[in-house]
Picture 1 (cartoon, rainbow, N blue to C red):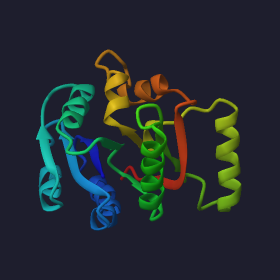
Picture 2 (picture 1 turned 180 degrees about the horizontal axis):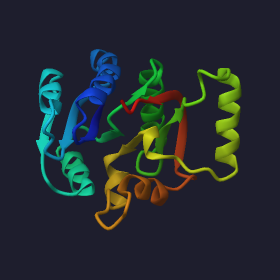
Picture 3 (picture 1 turned 90 degrees about the horizontal axis):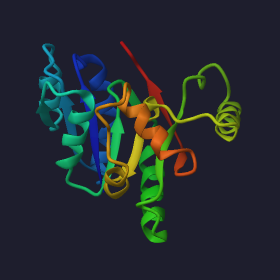
Picture 4 (picture 1 turned 90 degrees about the vertical axis):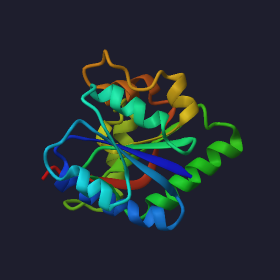
Length: 195
């Protein structure tokens, strides 16, 4: 149903966490393939990707070019971009499936994309409070961040021009061009690990 694209560079440790979060999606038939767009890591990133059954694409090209190249080889019409170290919570499969099914049923697949709800404060506060704060921030003009992942149809990705080389942060630039009106925040959360 979807292809996952992860750009890596010396990401061996954090990549394991992200791939582990995708296992249940692969078992459920939600994840068709995982593409690792690596910048030529010297650590064991390639080994981790190989052991997990991912397709590894190694290139010294800039991040935007690597992400576009990986997206171009994806086997599905839906792309999920994740940063290494991010892990969607266990509810992500149902949430993503519903979003995709609704978008396709209503003809919105080339119009809307989705991001995961950030879970940064979840351990310190209750789920209801964090969800209310996140919704308030979105209503007041907060933009999605690359750490929230991105679920987007190939059609919309290509219409937007994909990740652009000229942007200082090509992932944030894509989210900015997508805009708040076309971005749905899924109820499934995502956590970020940097170590």
